[in-house]
Structure formats: structure tokens, C-alpha cells
Amino acid sequence: MNYDVRAFDELTPRQLYAIYHLRVAIFVVEQACAYQEVDATDLTAQHLLGTDAGGQLMAYARLIPETVQTARIGRVIVNPAMRGQGAGRELVQTAIARIQKLWPTTMTINLQAQVYLDAFYRSFGFVAVSPAYLEDGIPHRDMVLKL
Image (cartoon, rainbow, N blue to C red):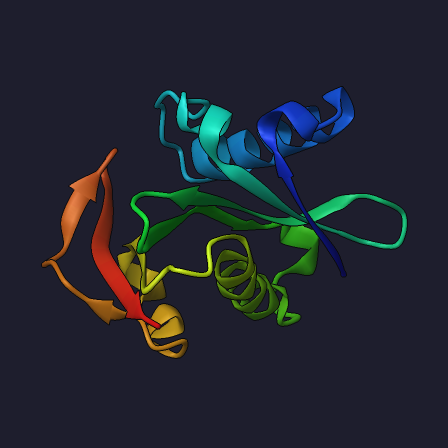
């Protein structure tokens, strides 16, 4: 998989369409969760795109600076065609590495994990810092990675 990070204004219309199409397909349709998927954070986030050899979007995450020492990973998704092939693991590893490169003073990475992915994120060193709670009807938990 080829990874590229772009600011919102650097995305081509086709890249933006592919991002929104995949995010809505997973977070709204597949998870049967009606909510405002596109939000203002898109404007300030760095967008991590994982594409196959043909340029198809296969993995995606938002990288969001929060403070000088804190960043957030959000909207982590893998195209259903790539599930079970290690693409999620590669995506999260790449997201962590890109955050460290983009914002070298980052000491902490936050994320809101769906509870069923708790063990997956723990395998990268994330630890839970909240009990489970519902976000748009789906159980989540706040997690933190100390670098």
C-alpha cells in the first residue's frame, strides 16, 4: 500500500470524493449510524490516504493536531476489500509514524476507539482512559498512547 498525507486544500476532488465515499459507506451505512459524518475537523486535519497500485483508496485516517504535545487519530477505516490482510495494523503504524514526523513535539496520541477494537489498539501501546460510552449509538472508549 502507498501512503500519502495531505492537508484538506491539497486533496484533489477525486481524493476527497473517495474519502467521503468510503467514510460514509463504513461509518453511516455499514454501521447503520445516521450522523453528520463530514465535519469542520476535515478542514484542519491531515488526511492519511492508503492506496493500492491502481490508486484506489484502501485505508484512511485523520491526523489532528490538538496541542503542541498532543495529536489525535480519527476516522480510522479500511476498505472492506482489504480487511483481514493486516491493512488496519499497517494504517495505525503509519498514522503514528506520520504524526511523529509532522509534529515532532507530540508526546501523546489520543483516539476514540470503538470498544470491539480495544485489544487491537492496545497492541500498539494505547491504554484506555475512560469507561465505555455511547457515541452516536456505538460503544466507544477514549484511549491514549504515550510516546
